Image (cartoon, rainbow, N blue to C red; front, top):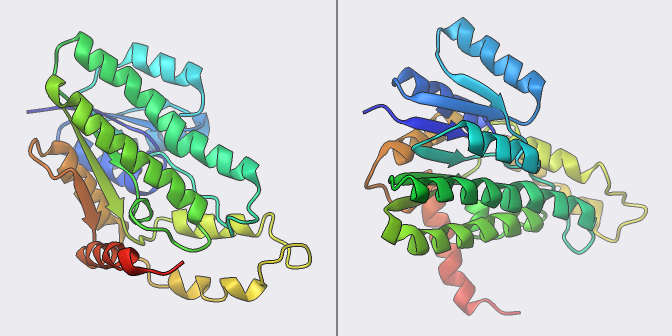
Length: 263
């Protein structure tokens, strides 16, 4: 049965792959992007591939955009995928960058979600909301702790929504990617060096020596997009969906180890 599915952050990465794949499966897809040039690129690329979808502008930090989207579209499934990463040692990271990250990853996602939840309930229809969070929502990666904090926040919000909306037959799920080669992680690392200065900051430059190596073997994003698509369409999906399995096992071990860690 065809569903109407709105995806945020569809200009690139998991969002774009999932949007195109869902449209190919015959679903009505509203692929949203932050700025108009990205919308134009989506329309052009979908046309070249013979894919039918709707592309629209949605900056999740812009309440006017959000209100417009709520008014314009009735949907069955929301895939809340838009996100940004600002990296750096949290003891020194400028708060303005952390605030902007929370505006996108947490407050923007929640404002959009609240509006669609209200519509689901008013229309007395079941709905589903899928959040692209991160493995960083379940453990804290050094030097991207603030980003992980924003994803921890979304994990908590998703769990709260899951419990509170169950009486309304609204389903909630999270998808937690490991390290995939969408460019997202690379941009997050690059963001550190837009403000970090070893002559000013006390964190030694050597702290970042292993970063290039950690990004050298990122996974193919198609498999993660497949997970997002499958979770969105599965009426009986798991709430939490960490991928790949090696990352799930790693996170579970870290969580177990945390109980005996010393200060």
